Image 1 (tube, rainbow, N blue to C red):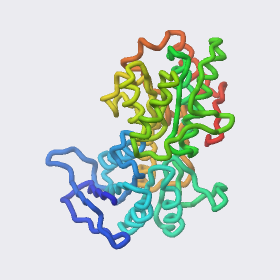
Image 2 (cartoon, helix red, strand yellow):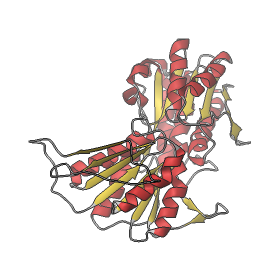
Image 3 (cartoon, rainbow, N blue to C red):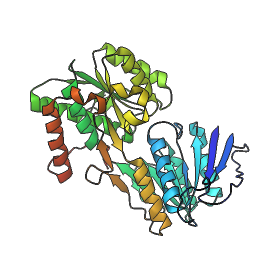
Image 4 (spheres, rainbow, N blue to C red):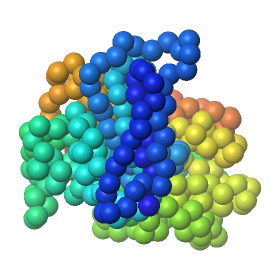
Length: 367
């Protein structure tokens, strides 16, 4: 099943008719700016987006991408079309539907859309494409460059390193944990940085804080196998809590909210959010959000759309780093008092060192 949303930058609502796999979408909604709303002058440019199975209300990377597209519509006066996937089988039909809508730019959100986006890009050279969280590759998984395909990538190990340092410095039990939805480069890169941050804290303070759920050297760890079922995240987090972990970083989209539920129920466990600042996107859990590893997916989408609308699209990869503010660590918000002052001082210095290049934080999945 899939849900399709079309939004025109200016003008009255229009009907949208799509066909895919001989079935019609479950819902089609067309809207226009409300009376008196302030909008940019209309631009003859259509930017389109397809989510992965998490959908555009996942409080994570799909939602961030959609917000970036919405901002581009409001600021630039472009037309947008958003297609929401609810299962992996939606990816190819949804991308094909967007191709049929004469989109100038089609953005796929998430690694799992790589195949559908790359196939469509190869078959439709006059359409520009972008892919969040993945580069393009051949059948042997060797990198390839597409003239009309732009990867939007993030070196999140840098910000995750800082989060791991904070987690280790804040833990009362000496055990922290991380897990992923699926073992993909865009997931394990968080876990690598987190693990290295804990190791750096241990080296700086002479501690032995343990990381449950991930072994960077072996590149093995704990995964729920999906990005959708919150019960899986809740159960895995309970297991870590039972082993003594009091800070957990779930890298699993909506599945991570299950871990937050387990942490809140435990009463003495904190969560490190990912992709967005969970203090804002998951306010029901704000009392236990220590910090978040933020990927500015929305900004990367906005910049890519603006380039296209300005006639400046290129296939050169976008790589978000601490230096270009494409990634960051969120404030400690309500738990600020829980983070020791010397840890805060160290994190500030470490962040500066990463930005100026004197400290390298690496990952086999880095871009």
